[in-house]
Amino acid sequence: MIDTTKPGVLLQMRAQPGGGDALAKVLTDVHHVDDPDGPVDWIVLRDDDDPEVIWVTEFSRDQDSFDRHYAETNEEVEQRHEDLIALLAEPPTRVLVRPVASS
Image (cartoon, rainbow, N blue to C red; front, side, top):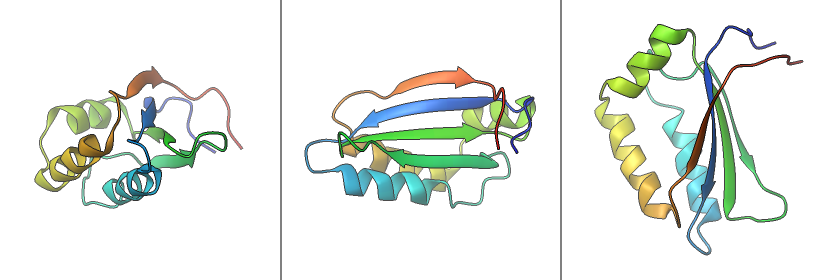
């Protein structure tokens, strides 16, 4: 169960044509880096109706971790973000969220 006090973000990204697999891999890889303030709960989802669309939901340990993660520079994370941006067909949609309920 995800703690309802954890700050989160919901992202929708569209890969360039034919780039859905590569985008899904980069998004998965970026979550496997050493970042003490990175998301503690996350999921990368593929859209069944459009293989170029990827959804990502991330939750941080607390607000301070969330703020540091988006403010500080981790060279490995930044490089993977650059790799990710190169795969996008358009800017991502980003919505700040908080969990209400989970299993």
